[in-house]
Amino acid sequence: MIRTYTPSDLARLHAINEASTPNVSKETERSLAACFAAGICLVAVDADDSPIGFLSLVEPGADYRSPNYAWFEARGGDYVYVDRIAFSPETRGQGLGPKLYEKAFERFAGRRSVMVCEINTLPPNPGSMRFHERLGFRVVGHAAHDPGVYEVAFLERSL
Image 1 (cartoon, rainbow, N blue to C red):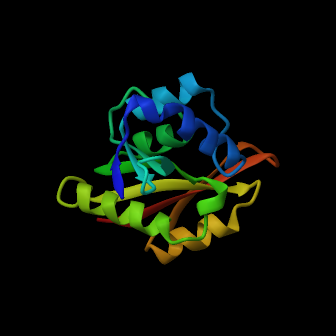
Image 2 (image 1 turned 90 degrees about the vertical axis):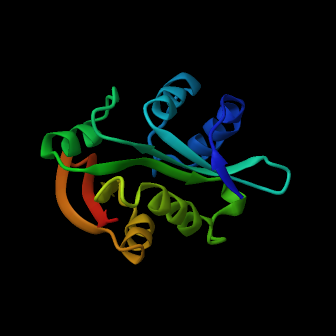
């Protein structure tokens, strides 16, 4: 099942986020809550309504401080930004990621023209790149925030 975020999810989603680094940025509970407050967070839950993964999205003009989000803001356009997607280690590879994305595609179809995201190229995250390419995302830019240490590719997918 997929539902929207509630504050009672925060501790579990923070643990999922931290288990997913460096593929997503390390956060405190407070900074992760700020990410969720800036946009919309879809939460995948198990049969007991316990969070097992999440997809955090931010629309243009939000009060959200991220160099990757800022890249899309500077570029302009009618987009929804994927801040992060993460799953508990025991649920990875079960096909939940495409389900979360499908719910997001449905939610923003007709409201936004594209969905955008970034993927680490350094440290490399080839699994995420393959995953997003299968969902129809394509590379539209690159940035080296800390050359040789932290670099990303920017992607978009039409809605």
